[in-house]
Image (cartoon, rainbow, N blue to C red):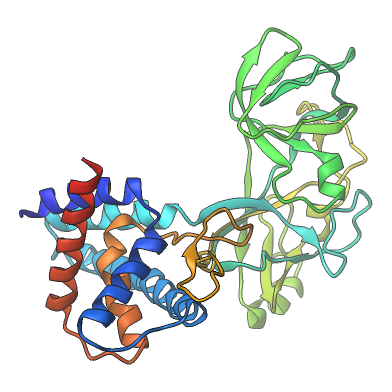
Amino acid sequence: MKGGQKKLALFFFLIFVSMINEVRNAVLAFLNKNNYGYITPQDFNLYAKQAQLDIFEDMFYQYNYQVNKENIRQSGTGYADIKKGLEEDIDIFTQDVILYNSPANLYSTNNTSNIFALPSDYYFINKVYYRPKFVIYNAINTGPVAPYRLLMGATEDTTNVSIGDWVVNINSLVAGTSTAFAQVTTIFGNKEVGVSRDIFTTTPVAYSIYSNIDVVEIEKVHQNRIMRLLSSNLTAPSVEFPAYVIDGNNIMVYPLEVTTPSFYVNGLGASNLNNNFVMCQYIRYPKDPKWTFLNITGGEPVFDQSQPDFQNFELPLDSFQDLIFRILQYSGVEVRDIDVANFATNRITEVNQEEA
């Protein structure tokens, strides 16, 4: 079977099955075939977590390797495709969130702190930024509520709203919800917009809309440099060129004015009474995989993905064989790549034939 055919077969194979369940089935079948014994669901989940983390971190090693080859002009068209594929795999784990004041870990409308808690699942910080201009400030939505829609009240309209502007559900922010913002995707007349997330499920709800123009990136500096920068008016961070340092699980943003009342409504220079949202684009760790099951008295546990703590692998489909190989290694089995590859290929063929 050629490379393209193998990928196509793997694609259809994993569409019809749960990846984590099929990986476990393959691992158990391989162990049984070679009389290597048995691993419990608890041990499998432990090995699966480590295997996924190994493959996840290897993505970045491979990506950096491809970038370095590109920089020294040793890459060709094929290598460019590899780099693009890795970027697409990594993008799955990339997300934007609003940061919350630490240690309360809540958004505050009277912020006097420049300390913000980083997401608990962050692996790498891409950038930290804020949006200094409001289009609509601290308004109240109205009904009827419709999915992925925002219906404005009597005093607001869509005159200054543009596709791509950021809508923030302030009520959900107070509750500490990290998914309380969305982007404007559609404008329906002068009173209603479509949004990318369903963040308005009730009314009345307070909201603000930030302009997607003039996003200010906050530069990362090292701890040993920030004090030197702050010691001089010529080098101190400003609202136009702010900076942050990482301090444990928090960041400290300079100057404080970035996070306190100072900026614009409708870009007209009118001071508002609300602080700006410091946001972070980061790469998160994959969620811990968990194979869940029903306990059967006197028999094998039966896979049950309806359990609330079920979690599939978050890796690309072509990680299937690598997962099997690594989990077998963690279970103490001496195994060769070619053995796993042949076994996985045969298993894929069998399931595809059954589904056909």
